[in-house]
Length: 486
Ligand code: ADP
Image 1 (cartoon, rainbow, N blue to C red):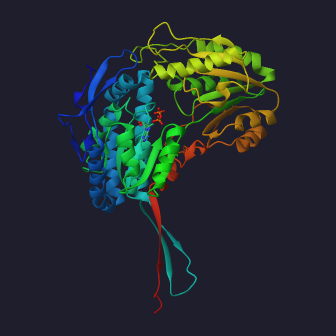
Image 2 (cartoon, rainbow, N blue to C red):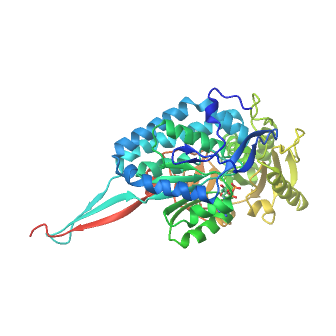
Image 3 (cartoon, rainbow, N blue to C red):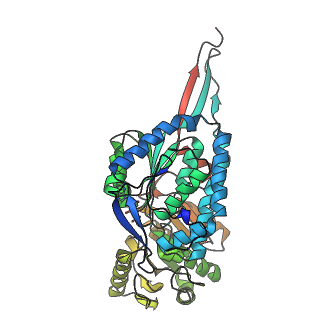
């Protein structure tokens, strides 16, 4: 049993219309700790009828919630934020237990996620409209921004907590209601958040959580005509399917999909900063984030020095159970994740890459994997085209800036990119040439609730965070008022 200061945060059933629903004949799913295999809870999964009930409750709650003054919605969101912060230790323990990331990283994720409630609590008061100079003295033209309605959110396992406020905070601030389906591997953080939503005075039906089978619950959320908006974070493959399905009922969609992030290290970079940035980007969450560096390109003049210093830093990372002191790398989420990393590694080695750090499963067994670096990577390797989503860093060599930009952009994806240089003019040239929604310049970390996060090309549609994030949950209404001078 997971030790918590407040054990009522550990839930094992869907949260629908403000109530915990655990039918006697529920479809049970064991939720396990990936570091130990131990069962944390036996989860009662939601079925299609539960998804429908949650959607109908969201629809029923919509008029009152959207009619509340922004200032009042703001207060509830702020209370939710305060409760998350007050319970950060328990929430971090739940997150590490279900997902595996080291406890300090889990804590960081909770606070990062919570900050979206803080930020959008303020934004709830600022859903401004517009006036437009009329073409005739008889008219007044106005633009209202109104909540889109009932929203469905589908979230992945790599950030079991933070992906939720990125969606729920702007949606609720805008006056929408939401039904959320968390990933089956990691439903517990979402359920703990729901418990705190109730305590914060978020009314029944405004935020429901329905963990369950993707093919049943996920399908209902995307197909149901009451739902007006689907916001999804996950793979491009699933995102494409959801977008096609949402087309049947012309739902608005926001999609945060896969990436294949390049890191460019130029000859004029501060190598220490580049090494630090590349490690931070590549090995966050054991390489399991959609903004993790997937391809590292180092310029010929500093290639050998970069590879040496980078592989030394990677070899020094401490692998272990996320609850253990000093651990920087936990287990991978499951065996399939380990196999994908192995497949990319063996393909790179077969095509001539050299292992310079790590290179195999970790002695700890299970799904632990050594943080790995290979040098001599080439464009024909799998690692150049596919997102590894694991702790494998391939280092490619390039000669010119032009070549680096071409290589970086040579992907169907366009989420995050990074580059390191001390040349001011190059910062602008490369920053503007990279075809990605996010560019980190001389840093491996950029996430902030006040900045827009999202991708171009096959990496998605829409933005989360910042004042742009709330637009995803608002419709524009044009009011043309005539007869003024009559
Ligand atoms: P990941 O494995 O990185 O989490 P996925 O795209 O497989 O990425 O899953 C992301 C989320 O989408 C999860 O909550 C998953 O259950 C859900 N999902 C997967 N397939 C479907 C589907 N066909 N319909 C609705 N949701 C789905």
